[in-house]
Image 1 (cartoon, rainbow, N blue to C red):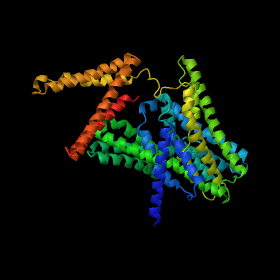
Image 2: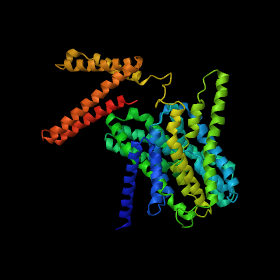
Image 3: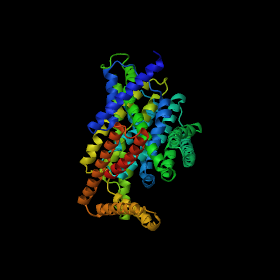
Image 4: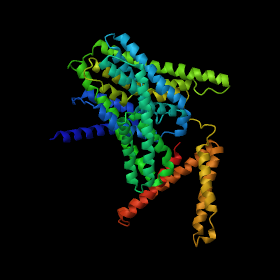
Length: 537
């Protein structure tokens, strides 16, 4: 059997394992990323499967762009812009501070490590990962502001970490480092990435507005992710920032450019693809641990102890990564905000509870892994640095990921979406306004010119009147009316399910053809999706 077929079989087995692990995570309400990572590590230790050598270029070019695009596409742009100061503090200041802290402690723990290698390790593990953040924050009981800050930070901080990493690797080879060159390069990479992302994003929006085929629109959104990354890198900019900017622009403009059918297909397709890619990313991180362990243990069995210096460096790196983030959050965000709040007489935006979550939610992931694997083979301590990176990824994703939700509930965050901002309407108010506009349009119809369809218009007026009143009552009437509204929506879902069963029975009895089945089934799917969306928080 050819190597290609064997590779395909292994890929199918990995996907099957990822689906099973995701099902287990869902069944026990655990973060899927943590379960996949542990499952991959279990495969690594418990089986005789060959070592997996991940190509860092494949990770950065093939896997990262669509995952970054998805995260940026669904980012709330207005909230992102409002939290720019906090995001920039974490994405730039915290990354630099963590890099320096890890480098100093690593050199103190193991003086044989060159300073350049220590800074390379710090740059590798300093930026929290967008994929890990998105995977772990989705269902946490956190206010929207915290989720915006954490996801926004993870989207843009890779640029700063990777620039420091690049200069550390150059210093390893040449033995020199220039802070001035580093600042200039960082500026060029950032501005170039932002520019290319904006060009790609607006070009994508222009094409999406002209395409009438929903399938081509779906393909174009994927193409835009890879094009933004490759163009950004080709023109010596940051491919990561280019994808993020492109995704923000497409996500911001998609509401006015895409029709409902195209938007549903894009959302459905991206949900499946992102699920597969995230599952592959985390399970492959666990599986790929085997290769550096074999080298560090000099070909001995996995159960043998690694050298003491390896464990000490890994443990110190994990500790510094976690502590440095807490220290930065307190000194660079909380204390300045408290000072400004006292001076201005305004409420403190980041209290101790939010600071605790910001400090604990620094998950590392696939970008750190790719950077570690890209270290030059000539580096004597390459596998030691890779193992330390694995240790940081495991602790932050598994330990912090599994404890983040209980911690959030323990300190008082229970509402998944948090309280609404005072200047924003609630979901019920927004629905009332939306339905009222539809109702006004229906009432402006000249019923006398409907030529026998007057009853249809009147029924629609009754339906939209009920929707307006239902949401208005739910907004002002308290929990009882909210439950009443949910009861009606649940009954509506039961009605849709009964209609679906009747439709399938008609098809089974050969009373309708496949075309009719698919058409009515699609209508039922849209109605069910609408009702489930309304039932949800």
